[in-house]
Image (cartoon, rainbow, N blue to C red):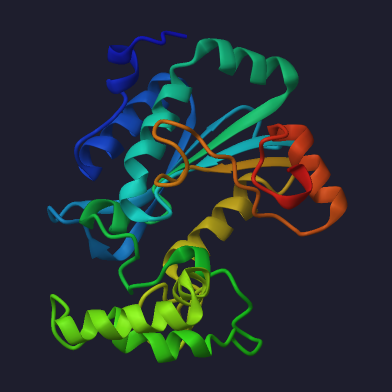
Length: 267
């Protein structure tokens, strides 16, 4: 695989439209089975069709699948898309996957609306990482966020000196870790607020589940990489384990992805 800067940057795009076109072109060239799950209601920032596009390389009934998804948080899709396109051009990796009997399943733009409009959230202001909960059960309660929302989303923008002083006083009283936890853990009461988890499964939630039912129903082993950006050192890929919190699963994550997986048992 080429490793020069020019070889890497050619996989990146400047818009969702360009990224989608590159992905579909490279998927077709690689001989992948391609399917598009088009959003039935919304369009992109340029009026374009938006979709979760799927490319499968390998057997449709494969027992082992490597799944790579991009664009869960909108603009993070630019990096994820480039990684997926580079993978489609990595003959050595594709050959090793085929030899091992592992199918490659790429899902381009889990949140195509956010990708196109450059929003972390989806068309309903939902943060998809907080949308995969059991909506038939009582939803998680985040009382701290309710207290904080007027401070992080003041009535006027930019914040006034009084707003900033009130926020600083909250952080001084509770500490920065508590402030960050209260804001980022998610909330289900304020549709216009930060890290809103939704009131029901979103279109992206339902779509990714439909893709898994169709393409991964036969799998006994599934390795899933969801590409995000913004954490860790510049240019460094931090591997965050977000699966079940059991010793067996955490140990398997370390075995698969390496001892530097961000999970307590691996530290």
